[in-house]
Image (cartoon, rainbow, N blue to C red; front, side, top):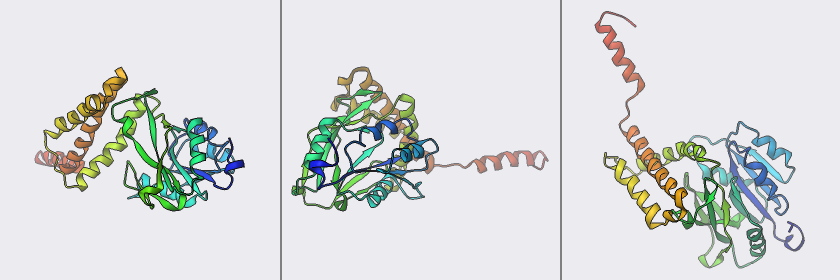
Length: 284
């Protein structure tokens, strides 16, 4: 399979965003280079070997160093990649995603269809390096393959897809993308530090006032939905661990929102201590 030959009339590129991806990046590039026309990486200020790996991969990889500014989210990064790309069609990926041979064949045969402007496809999500059949992971189905001139992203942490085309000009791919997610549980918890802040921002922007019972009822509701209603129990211990993680992650988001609504600055505490010393006649 190759980006040339029968599919030369329609070019396919890949757009991805990165931040300190030196571990996942080599395999990501290696499995795409043989069959796509270009790979555009928009980088959010990596401090590891991400830039070097991209530049060593050859001219097919376009590396764009563009750290997010205040008010910019992942959707802005992905749109920068669209603007820098030149291919007719773009496949939008994360660095920890992988295309199977079956999906690659389906993609290349689908983009030559003149009646379609975009395609939905599903993910086979991995948690702790194990495929997840339930827990809500199986519901993801988005348009991440589209004509370059017809597609943009919106939203914040979990981007929304904006395809400028009639519904009848969208298709559905049958083979899933593999989404490997985190290398271990520590990485999952580390990523949650970012996720919880964006979720807290969303709550505050909606005018939501966090109450004490939200710290229990909201996380519990999400756990019950994931583990029982969405079949997380089918994934055994991995599904159970994910459910417990969801409880903590949801709690963290509401705790962050509450803290920002009821903030008490460090300077106020320092002033209190200074006043206590002043009462004893000591000037700090």
